[in-house]
Structures are given as structure tokens and as C-alpha cells.
Image 1 (cartoon, rainbow, N blue to C red):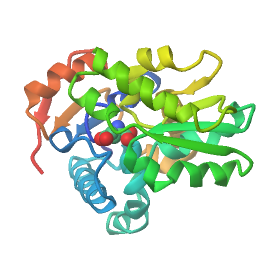
Image 2: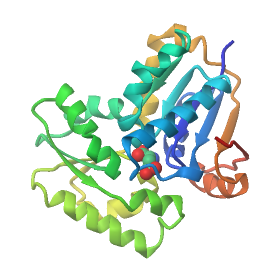
Image 3: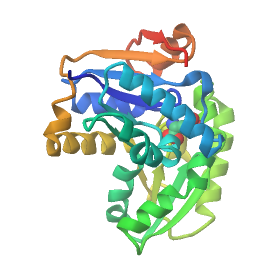
Length: 272
Ligand code: DGL
């Protein structure tokens, strides 16, 4: 039986991707699942991120999804490959899990003119080297410089992203990235929480540097994927429904999520 498309993130950040997916593909049913009670994932070990992500993906499958998007770079970097190569084997042939790193790395080499790309991401994503490996796969001539931003996702999760404290960390980490090489002309926001800091990021990033934000890219790639895979598309229901789950208290989630989502949200609690 067809089911909703699952969108997973450690917390609120995936809403920045979900917003774009929903705008491009409004006809599908969706379940958004934020593991807010255990966010942020960015500083956690490979084993923990894998274990948490798999639990959430299983929940989405049990809720009827056949296709799940990990709208989280940290989970895409640390859990996606194992889930795709090992865990999906236990499900039927029409179950898929896709991430957000591939759609970004596939195009970034066509944006840079200097061949120098900067990545701003969580410590976990940086440590995994996923961006370095994937960009080298598509564009071997491109140089990749990474900067971990350990405070950015926690600032967003704690609704502190508009205050002056956030300015301090955003400026500091952008400076550290740009200090690595003069030639950086393209910077990827490699964490789905970061678009919520966009105003501050733009303030501290020189205007001639191109900023790559993932939401629209991921939405475009998903639309393309569903066109190329009618057998998966047939397992995605199209009734325009949206359901939100959180591992946090729904009232807490709803208040913040509607700020990030731009519309009222009424979530249900799910305990793992
Ligand atoms: N939004 C996530 C990402 O794209 C994770 C942030 C976190 O939980 O630390 O990496």
C-alpha cells in the first residue's frame, strides 16, 4: 500500500529542506520526524548517530513510509551508507533511504570558478570527510576546505539563533574557514539547521562568495528521482497530508517548528 514520504532530522533543521520539498511536490503525503529530545547529533559518535537514525527510519517505515529522506547532513554522513547497504536488505525491494550530501556534491564543482569550495558543517559531518570524499568523486580537481561549527545547530535548537551570541560564533567560524585559503569562492551550508542563521551568515560572508543552501537542491533531486523511479513513486501516496512527529513534548516542538516551518504545526509525540 502506498504511504507518505518520510523526512527525518535530528531536530528542527530538516524543516528547511521539508519546506522546499513540499513547495515543489505538494501533492504527496509527508511525515516529518524530528528527534528533538536527542538533538543535536553533531557531536555524537558514528555508532550513536547510526543507532538513533536507524531507530527513527524504522519508525517511519512502520508508519507506512517506503521512501525516507535523511534531511540531516550528520545522519547522511554517518548512518546513510550502512542503512542502505545493510539494514534495507531486511525490508522489501521498494524501500529507499536517501540523504542530502549527494545532491549537493553533485553540483558544487559546477558553481565554483576558482576550484576552491568551503564547507560549514557539524563536527560529525566534518570528521566523516563525506564532503571531501564525495566532491573528489564528482570533481577531482576541486579543493575542499572544511570548518566545524559546533555551536550553530545548538543555537538553532535552543532558539538562540537570532541573538547576539549567535553573531559571535557565526563570525568566528566563517573567519576560520576563509583563513584556510584565499581562493574559496563557494561555501556550502552543510547542515540543514544553518539556513535559520542565513541573515547572520550573509552578514559575515563576503558578498562575492556564492552560498550554497541545500533545501532547493534536495527538492529538485527528489523530484528527478521520483520521475526516474516510477516503481518507488507508485509507493508514495498523494493526498496532500502532513503529519509531524517529535521525540520531544509536542507543545515545545509545535511552537518552535511553526517559526521555522512558516505555518502552524501540530505534532504528535513518539517515544523511542
Ligand atoms: N541538521 C543536522 C545536519 O544537517 C544536524 C545538526 C545536529 O543535530 O547537530 O547536520
